[in-house]
Amino acid sequence: MVHADAAKFAPDVTKEQAYEQVLDQAEGLFFEQRNWVCNLANTASLLWHAYKSLPAPSNQVNWAGFYTLDPQSRPGKPQLILGPFSGKVACQTIPFGRGVCGTAAATATTQVVGDVDAFPGHIACDGDSRSEIVVPIVVVPSAGSGGGEGRVVAIIDVDCTAPDGFDDVDRLWLEKLARLVAESCDWP
Amino acid sequence: MVHADAAKFAPDVTKEQAYEQVLDQAEGLFFEQRNWVCNLANTASLLWHAYKSLPAPSNQVNWAGFYTLDPQSRPGKPQLILGPFSGKVACQTIPFGRGVCGTAAATATTQVVGDVDAFPGHIACDGDSRSEIVVPIVVVPSAGSGGGEGRVVAIIDVDCTAPDGFDDVDRLWLEKLARLVAESCDWP
Image (tube, rainbow over all chains, first blue to last red):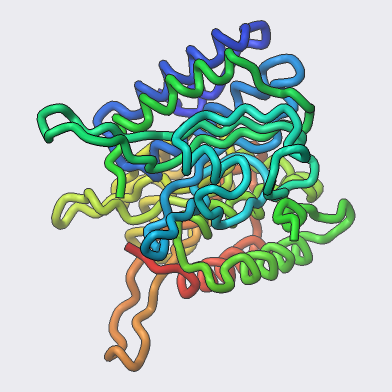
């Protein structure tokens, strides 16, 4: 298989169909491969090419990628660190609770922000970004290991140069993708 | 600082000037940050946007990124695993010695390939790629630690849809970048 074909999206697909292809292709790429860097790198590429195949505002996405829990976080001060992405150069670290990414990580809840400039503490890595969706990737301990609280290991972050670039369809499918990624990788 | 500005290249720069900016920006981004995933992710983005600012054939680069030494390699069978990149979905693992990337890793020498289809054992991750440059990232033990052999920890891989997309300028500057990256990151 020529791997690049996984990032080919037909020009007339709906947003639902594009996300469905992302999930199908991701699941195939994760088969017998649990390295988180490798899997997030390919997933960022899949997301980027999916958005670019869609009509506006989705094709105005200017950043799609991941931040993960920084192993160098100080005790009691968790922070995110930049992971694989497609787009322009980005901020390296983000404290939990700061901006859209930090809020999603600290609260373990998806943030859909129609106007990033109105979001308290927004971190402007790219002044062109107008809206953003951030979805936490939560690893839930298996019942066999005693269960317990979920752990935020990473976030999916997507930025758009159009306001209100994301809706409930994005939320629904990116949350599905987050669950797939959470269970398909070995996390540090 | 708005980080995305680091990926802005003037439209009339020469290839030397674009690479010089990549190195300058990378050095700035690596300041007080030695996380290899974070640093390689931003470097892949810098390279991608540098190539896109240049005339042909450089602007026909269709993949720019990294493979690293796979921690899951079997004893005596080292392999590369996909790291951060810009471009379409790519092959996850490559054995040392196989194709252009595997040859650069096994021999610790840069490979400049004008026609990938003529390279023995070429792995076609993307059928559109026509030429390729692969530069090993070698960590050299410090004299203080007793010196010794260099260790290939990763490779820089850049693909182009034009034949003969890379020349000695690319080799010179990507080898400089490889040395900077080697000494600026903590490798697993």
